[in-house]
Length: 191
Ligand SMILES: [Mg+2]
Image 1 (cartoon, rainbow, N blue to C red):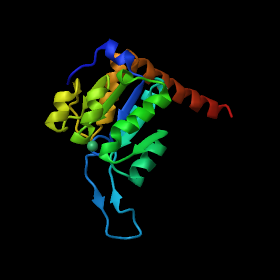
Image 2 (cartoon, rainbow, N blue to C red; image 1 turned 135 degrees about the vertical axis):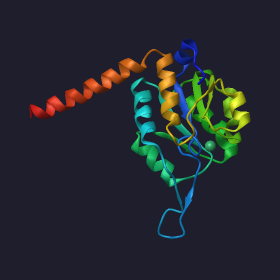
Image 3 (cartoon, rainbow, N blue to C red; image 1 turned 45 degrees about the vertical axis):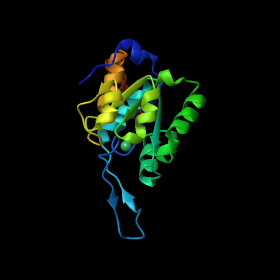
């Protein structure tokens, strides 16, 4: 696994995630039943807590997908991600520009975890370009961080943990999370 320097990590304010092939394994379940959503996806539960930790560290998290999908939208909403941009692959630069302007952040302050060629233009612009283990060669060559985990298998978790560890925040975030669970339990007990 490559590593992220503390300086690079501390500069980051926005974490951008591609959806298909990063939050998922890239597989699409296509249903014939017209009453069903026509495409289904499988997400990894470990990524959910990672996104929670990023947000606890006051980092903005946004999804930039080159495909319109209700399953990605539902998963994002369940995780509390407010910025979900589902555009054509040609629209990713514009979508990220919009996200960064709204966040008051620069391109240098953004990380992007990606897997395929549609992500290359954005990867070339952000401060911390990152790739999942099974990203295409061009994406891996552009990335300064390449994970050991494939898309859909907890790759967002791996990257988030690496970023937060490089910022020196991971352990304290985990401890704060555990303490909050105990606090919640005690408050219920005293009710
Ligand atoms: Mg992708």
